[in-house]
Length: 557
Image (tube, rainbow, N blue to C red; front, side, top):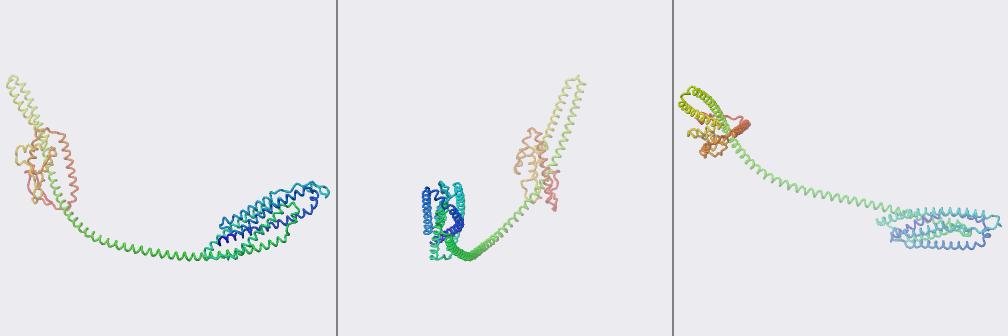
């Protein structure tokens, strides 16, 4: 209810301001217009009445109808204003609706004033007064133009007043919103008695303003009739009414300024309280944040303590496991060292075997060269014998039978010698191992390969040795399978079984090339591994001589 009353009061104040401004403007206009109308009435007092006795009833009837219409419109506007003052609206948009209707009605009335019927055509005038008809028509035309200009000016003033009225309504709405905010903040509104008084004053001002507007609009519509100009109220009454209304408006403005000051004070008080509340809330939030941070720090400390205990337990267990791993690694290192020593000894033994094989190969090459030379010598001897035989045949042609016997004997001997030489050449082509197989086939017990203990006699004889190495070499050359030390005799028998096979020179050459490549690679590996033996002492021991003349001394590291 208080909001609705405040809104209605503000609307009434705005309407009163606007109407007072309109009355002030219309007052000056009305004084000038009344002076002009009085002069015109003095100049034409009786010409129109005498010149147009027949048309005056028609003019009076039209003016009377127009006065009735204007009076009805004024009554409607005054009723609308009274309704607006008696029943204030509940909302902001609805509160402005009656004033807009009043404004539209006032606008329509002003438009009717401007667009209303002009002065009637002048009647046929007589020439008794001394003025001619064209002069009278000219004067009337000038008055009509002046009235039209005044109507246009009044229309502009009404539009300006409407704009001001809208602006005042907006200001009033802002004041109303500020008043409602101050009321919600705890400010006290004016008492109901003062509100009722202000309502009654505003209603009376609205009625007076509507009446004055109706009175002002009448001479504008009917400016051409001299009878209406005499019925206007004197300017002194209007000035008195205007002064009283201005005083009431000033008092209302003072009240509005007081209300604004109260609103500002309440707003400042509410802002100070809000600032205090915000400061207290800020303190509470900071204390809450500090509490949360303290709780988080406590939780972090607990977690850190748990992690440190777990880490200590893990470190103890890892230390014990590391010690066990260290002991196992030390044992593995010792085992690796022993294995490395064994491997180095085996490498030295293999190097010895390689040297023996190379010496055997060289001896085989030398024997093959000697066999080749013997074959060439035999071929030469055979050629010499053939030439001698031919010479003997030529010399002894007579004794053909003896010659034939000699020939057959020599031929058989030469053929046998040639077969022997060819067999020797084939044996030379088959290589050193074929010669070894022949020696084994001959049955010499000393020619058998035997395993040699190169470890100095301390260790038991293993499955490896120079004999096994020779067997590996023979198998690599011949392409046969090798067995262990227990299958040595069977292996020799297998070597002796393939005496009748054909000899393949290409495979022999490829085997020799591969053997040379492997030997070079082994030598390189041994040279690369010699750096590991720097600082070691070599003890030469004479274990035994293998094969009578081929094996030298064996040494231990």
